[in-house]
Length: 224
Image 1: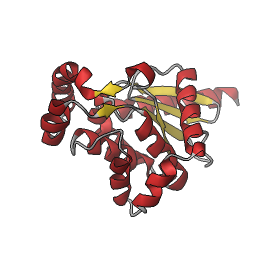
Image 2 (image 1 turned 90 degrees about the horizontal axis):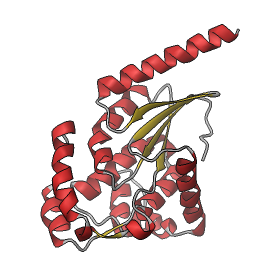
Image 3 (image 1 turned 90 degrees about the vertical axis):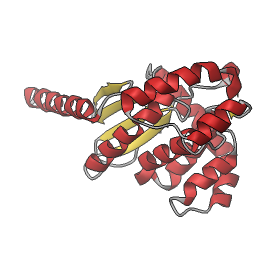
Image 4 (image 1 turned 135 degrees about the horizontal axis):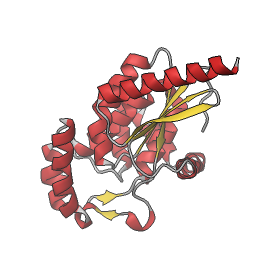
């Protein structure tokens, strides 16, 4: 679960079915673009919709029909017609966080340098393109954008090793006490700070990030 590089790490903890994470995706994408050369980015899936919470989207369609408008107004993101008029209206698409988490865990082992763009692509597939989140084919479609073998990827998503990775991942997020998504954590050596809890506009995220880095520098100087 721990990144292997020597750079400070920015953890993006999200859930593919989290509407606010979808709204945050342009922010984290730009934040990644600006900082990817100096920091290592790592994505963890939170497991927001698991166990008894899983089921047809029709069971929560009433809530989503109101909530998505709040996300659009606050973030400027657009939910696609395919999701709103097909997935949501038909109501039979099965909602579970596990398939997307399997895709992310597998992708992370193969292309760790572009996990942020992949998380953004997954959410676009679900909330804009209206692709079913429980179907392996959705994630096979997503990896095509990264010039990967979609058939092989879908086959490997169900490997026991990948399933174990996801179980560990959900436990790590729970152990960290993260219950809301999106969250962003910055870790530099022994110092770890939450730099975003919930949706943050890019200027706010960057200001918090810069303040945290300055605080870490001051602590190190004080300990010398």
